[in-house]
Image 1 (cartoon, one colour):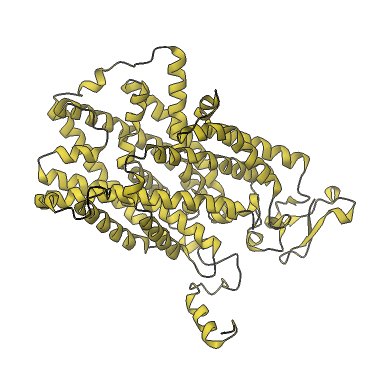
Image 2 (image 1 turned 180 degrees about the vertical axis):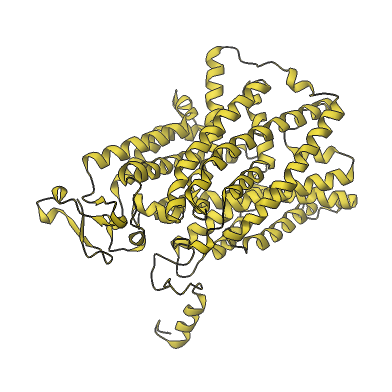
Amino acid sequence: MISTSHPTLQKLIKTLEVEQDNDVSTNSNWINRDLAPVPPERRTWKWWNFCTFWISDCLNVNSFMIAGSFIALGCNWWQALIVVAVGYSLAAVVLVINGRAGAVYHVGYPVLTRSSFGLVGAYIPILNRILLGIVWYSVQSWIGGECVYQMLRAMAPSVADIPNTFGPNAGLTVAQFLGWFLFSLLSLIAIWFPVEKIRHLFTLKSIIVPIAAVALFVWAVVNSHGLGPIVDQPATFTSSSQAAWAIVSGITGCMGNMAALIVNTPDFTRYSTKPSDITYSQLITMPLGFFLTSFIGIIVTSAAQHLYGEALWNPIDILDRMENRAAVFFLAFAFAFATLGTNLAANSIPVGADLSAVFPRFLNQRRGGYICAAIAMCLTPWNLLSGAQNFLNFLTAYTIFLAPITGIMITDYYFVKKGKLAVPQLYDPSGIYWYKWGCNWRAYASYILAIVPNLPGFVGAVGHTAPPGADRIFTLAWFVGFLLSSAFYYLFNMFFPCHWIIAENEKEVVVDPSSVPKDDHEKEQITSRHSGQTYDDA
């Protein structure tokens, strides 16, 4: 048996370690280059980068179908647009609030969760995000593959006639597999680039994709000789109560759709040049972008109903019916490009950062992104999406586990820590954020208590029997989880406070002598390597 001290094994371990800057050590289990605060020379995201980010992110295949889901609930077209405007405006406010800590201290989501959950306790919120991100990466890669297939079909229509050697029960054809494989391959190239440089991709996407969206809008208006039949459809609500719950459900759906990006927004805001760059750029661009995308989606679908006799909310289905090969190629390229950017922003980059926090010595954000892509490919997304409506409901309902994390992070930063973090101690197992045994019980108690009321509705959403009234609570799932976790966390810290406070002077953490418990055997003493003081968490 080879000892771990064997030179060959030591050399192999050293080879597997991620490369670091000179000022960051690989000997720590809590830090590497991608987890450390972003140095000034890498803070390259200005306000207009956040604008182009959201312009590019909102223009994707899923966003075109948002308004359609609200019309299916019974809204007319303008009611659906109001729901989109209100829902995404609220989402933008929460996103900006949660992103400020990253913009001020230039650390990402995995590190910030240590402040509220503890250095060890942060693993559960991190793994939570990893699971959802990998599954969504798989789903988005399949959507991107469908776009690539349309590009191939536009270039060579005979692609559609490739013999399907996979068989009728495989869930996909050889041609579809080819499109998915090519998209997945191109995604691997994009994952290579660091976040401070990937902003150029979003800038390019914010130019190409809006042109495609406007072109599709013009095509719809010209071919349907107006705005089409959908804009003439009335609302189908039978009562004011039904209308109210449908609208609330739609707004909650907007929050749920953005839940993952809201919780991990510090992974991007940490690269901002200054904190103010993340505010108005996102508060305005994000809701406006989703509003305009939804409006175009309504008009294009209305034209499809006029031309093809059915409401095709998925733009890929419309491309499959179009006869102009050049138009199909350009639009499919734009949608593939849009899906690539969305998959990077919402899935591979956050998952890469999260995996880096789990194994900081051997994984950086790039390696984590590749692991995300590899696992996502093994999930065979064509099987996940083959008529499995309950699976899609599960992905949407899973946001009940993300909303409480957001509530705890915001409450911790603004009301408990007063916006003051001792950044070096976010990487220090002997520091104040170790709490007790590495976990902050206040955060976990709040997290569990906020999830419980939504669990019956979650069970019903994935196809099982739920108790009466559970669906009503679940209609407010994101708000229930967010508000309950915030309230419980604040109360726990009020009645069972950590016995230290954050001082203004040089962001130093000091002990509040009046709060130190008199009974020494009931407290855990933690000595900080950074200040030499003792911190207590009863």
